[in-house]
Length: 273
Length: 178
Image (tube, rainbow over all chains, first blue to last red; front, side, top):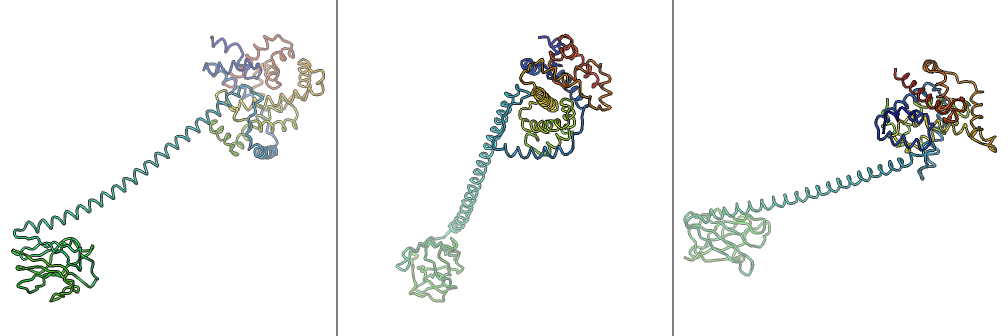
């Protein structure tokens, strides 16, 4: 179609003046959305009429605004439960656009809602991941600490065992400590003794276990050590023992006794050859 | 100057300040147009309120794609005022109401009323418009005459009316451009 001819036909002027039929109005609306030249001409003509109307401006009485605002608030409250969807009497063709706008707004709203749900669920996921990572991390740290402790312990035991001449003896509990089980590392050459408590009953705070070495039937103090869970895994005793026919364990007062209390004897083993 | 899209957004949110701004900005122009159409201050004031209520309620119907907000408001004001004028004029003669009758009544009304006091700005611009073109703009724009009605009122062929409307608006466009 010939746009220039259409613009020159005068229909746009009649359109902005409101002097066209409904059918002509729809035609102009449609064509102006297709041809930028028509839209531009329409805008210029509308602007001219706006300016022309502005020239005729007359200030309305000031009290009119207050009375209008009252009506507006009043009607707004009244209408709020049921939004008005009344077609504009001036522009019947604007009704579909009105619906389209609503649909578009609803679509945008829905999109935003969906997107925010998506974000929230993402956030939740992230938070779950973070907390599971944190718990994994702390359990790994615990495990690492345990491994390190065990390694340190094993190194100590290995260091003892590596020394030439170290002997390993096992002392099992008698009827006073049926589950008692102690490993004894003894090196007659450097006269060192260490005990590894595998299982011994817990003692009163003022009591300790005491190790005795028996030489020719005489008990010789070989040092004290602790039992129970709080005790270190490997305890070195600070009495030099170069000779022993047997080893025995009694329960004594904290710090040890000069002679063993035989009634508390709970384990004994001969050294053998 | 508030950007129009921001203003419309605020209005759609029923923002009171936006309405105040809208009223302060446009009520003189709309009142001027309405008063020029109905030529009765009391009725023009009632109509101006109706118009702003209409604008307020039907903002959703305004489509920015089709034109500017002020143009739309002007159309609401103009149509409301012209409708009111027509129904006021036709009520006594409703028994024998025809379009021809209607035109004559409106025409008579238009001719007998005193013209509005005009601003200096109006005089300046309008004095540059040719009188017959200005008359046509006023008849069609301010009195809502159709082409046919204008042709009859001015006693000229329909084709001439169309040509003159175009010429008048093109002249107006040039006047405001400079």
